[in-house]
Image (tube, rainbow, N blue to C red; front, top):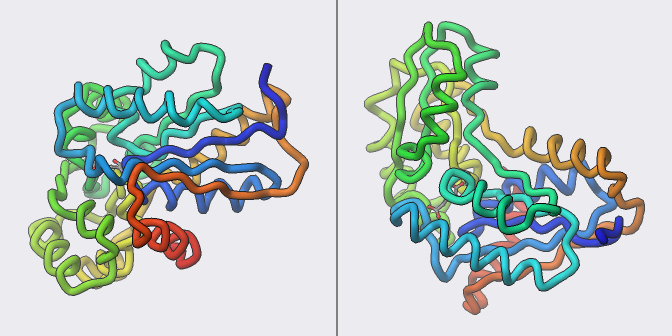
Length: 256
Ligand code: DGL
């Protein structure tokens, strides 16, 4: 069965899950991580739900050729479209999926205006409606799609004027309406600085990376599968472009 020194696999449609990988390596420094980005097929967020489901299950099959003790779906979009299918296909595996940190935002900031910036798939799936229902209703909650933003981050342009312009277009209409912005896509922590320039410092930015890392640790501890070995990261990507490999390392090193 599963061994303590098996990999924790971290999956995203591309480079976004690296924001979650950073939290995971902070909390679990003794683990062997296998990061798999499907950049050749990114973005997932504007595809049909069925297409995202298929891509996610195919990526999982590739990942699970290696000895893996837990799969972290570090992609809100893939979680929304395919987490149940993944669990059904791999019933014995620990499968953790990231979700927008909306509940955290509502609990911490009751009565305040909350924006959830995420992909089309995440915002239209049933899972998101269920999350809305579980969350306090005495406050305005805005769904904010961000078409084009993931592409810019995948292209290594997180820190460009193009990105800032797009963010300004997307977020300016909400400037006086929201006190908290939930980053409901794992790519978005990499444009935190640009978001701050548009919205100002008073708006709180929240993402689900840390909570996902804590849940991963809790589940592994429960299963007696925490490693006490030397930590390492193995990088895999469906894109063979050397620029992608460089971008992954750069985003990991740079942080959020
Ligand atoms: N990083 C992904 C997420 O958390 C989605 C990006 C994409 O559209 O592929 O939703």
